[in-house]
Image 1 (cartoon, rainbow, N blue to C red):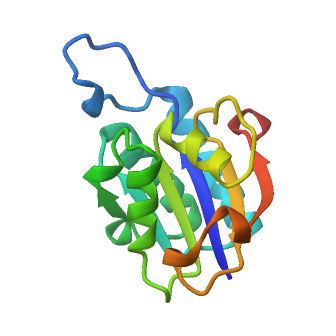
Image 2: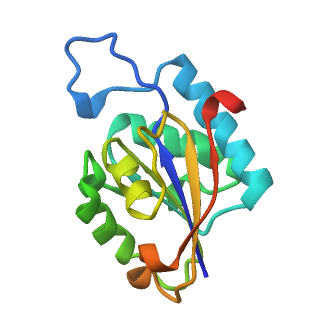
Length: 162
């Protein structure tokens, strides 16, 4: 059994016209929501075995803030440049590389890829909001074998509900 927690990065700042999209940081609300979601995830799921995140500034900040509240070591977060604005095929490729020994993974990334991913697994979302999480379970022994056929939607938690 595999559990995938799909988390969109927190709300980011558009204050600096000089920053490239990749380098945009979280704004105050994004920082707060990312921390609160980490605390919520600890209560509901416990500490994950892996946090896998895009290497963009806003996703690294989201992953680190969530990790602090999950008692997950920051130096164990895996940052993947390929997840930056990745489409569904690239996201699935990154997921397929996760060790079979990992049963619970938090994936921190971007839209539209994450919304496309949750819809691929059977949900019908127009938009996964910032700092929100979809939890899916898969009846599969490895991450390479997860698919819509063995996916089971568990819950959706919106940051505004915290």
